[in-house]
Each structure stands twice: as C-alpha cells, then as structure tokens.
Length: 325
Ligand code: G4F
Image 1: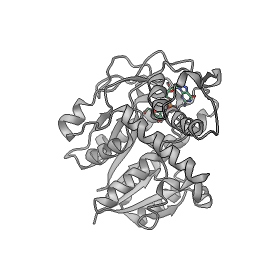
Image 2 (image 1 turned 90 degrees about the vertical axis):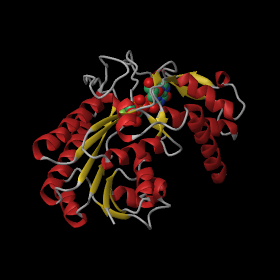
Image 3 (image 1 turned 180 degrees about the vertical axis):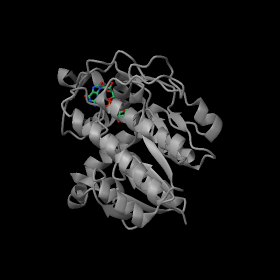
Image 4 (image 1 turned 180 degrees about the horizontal axis):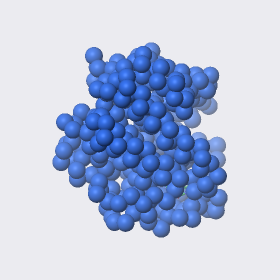
C-alpha cells in the first residue's frame, strides 16, 4: 500500500485529494495545525467525513524540526505540498509572513525528504499568479514568469527550489501551475464562494445584497476535483515535470453572478452593490492557461463548465444554511 503525506489537507484541494488517494488504496497521512484540532468543527469541516481514515500529525510546517520528525516517522512514497497562505493580497502588509511560510515550508519538506525518503515523489502547488503580468496569452509551461503579488513571488521562489531539487538532487519533484479552481469547499473569502453563499443567504431571506469589487475581472475558473485528479496524474507520470492546469476559457465575475442568481430565479442586478474595499488596483492582465501539455502527456482535460460548478455551489450553500436554520 503506497503512503502519501499531504500538507493543507483541511483546505478545498487537500480534502478532495485525501478522498481521491484513499479511494485509490493509499495510506494517507496529513499535517494539521494545533489550532485546527482545537477548532475542529470549523477548521476540519472539509475532512470531517475522513478523519477516521486519515492519519493526522499535529505540527506546524513552519517548524523545520517538526517537519523532519514527521517525514522520519511516515517515510512517504508521495508528498503533496498544498499548504500555503493562498489569498492574493496586494496590500504588501503581510509580505514577510507570506514569503516565509510559502518558501520555508517547501524547503523544510524537500530537504527532509532528500535525507530521509529520497525515493519520495514531491508535488508542489504552483499558481497562475506566478505568471502575474503575463508576457503572453494563453500561458503555458514555456511562458516567462512575471509575478505581480507577494503571493506570486513566494510561489515562484518555492517553484525554483522544487526545480533545483529535481535538476541538482535527482528528486522526483514536480509542480502543477494551477489556475483558479472552485467547488462547494472553496473558502468564503474567494469570489465564487462569496457569491454562492450570498445567493443562499438572499434566497433564504437572511440578506438582501452582496458587495463586490471589480465584476468585470475575468478568470480561468475550473472545478477543484478535476485539478486534484491532475495532481495525482502529475505524480504518476513517468518523469518529474511541470504542468499548467487550466480550462483555457475566461469568464467574468459578472458571469458568475448571473449564473449563481439564476439558480434561484433572481436577477443579480437588484442585489449587487459596489464596494471599493474589494477593488484590486492591479488587474490589467487577465490570466488564461493552455493545458495542451497536460492533455497530451497526462490525458487530463477539464470536465465541468463554470455554470455547472456554480450551480453545485449554490445548491450546497442553500442546503448548508438551510440545515443550520
Ligand atoms: O476569488 P479570488 O479572490 O481569487 P484570485 O485572487 O484569482 O486567487 C485565487 O486563484 C489564484 C490562481 O489560481 C490562486 F493562486 C490563489 O491562491 C487563489 O486560489 O478573486 C477572483 C477575482 C479577482 O479578479 C478579484 O478582483 O474576483 C475579483 N473580485 C471582485 N470582487 C473579488 C471581489 N474577489 C474577492 N475575493 N472578493 C470580492 O469582493
């Protein structure tokens, strides 16, 4: 039975990945913060149905010794490093912590694996934010990186570390360069979930409006379970490599609004308010990915259209809120 270790298991991607690996016969270990265990109802919600099947290790991945000890005891065959400060902030207030935690944790994992489990395959969750002010569109694996946010810079720095461990230390270390991907488990701070949860509140009479920033902003939005499947394909490929995972189709925030409100038969224009607080100043370049390499070498293609993803999210949010009433 292969053994996998996941960081970031409590998030959207981590929880779907844990399900996928368990279903495929893996022994699945995961590192979770003490704060998550202490606030399990909220922070372990995405994996509450899996906790009996998972082997959880309480530690902070910002601590080198803790990471080292866990790798020494688990000796994984595959390690999926998904944990990150993942909200794209342009304020630069929290630069140091985003840089440190996104870079250092990757380093602690790689260096521990190199010493204690050099056979282990390593997956790094890269991001389209590494392309930033992209110098070409659609972006693929040969597009030059040009990050515009601290988040993008931190991901790019860690990505170079991953490539270094592959090229100079011979490790099976690879990266997925993932574009936005959504699901009913998306965090409430991201725009799709913010919209679908607001639709649920409005539909059930708890609210009347939603406040957003730039509704003309466009994204390449995919379905999180598809993207997690791509991660596993990347890890099972013959050689370690990097892959862009995207749909290649752009939609605006306005499109998401339209789809989400249509699920409950409402017109978003009657409920939308602009709030400059949510407006991001630096969104001149729209990122759109080309997944041709993943299709050719991994047989991966996206399976869901945005309207179907949004439909599922709205229905789940209504059910969630309805159950609390
Ligand atoms: O949902 P978002 O916050 O996602 P964003 O910034 O694109 O980042 C996500 O995708 C990246 C690429 O995969 C990841 F690297 C990152 O970790 C994260 O998963 O914002 C989407 C768009 C933006 O253009 C934003 O300006 O929605 C626009 N937007 C408009 N009003 C808003 C709002 N975004 C948020 N969060 N809240 C608003 O009120």
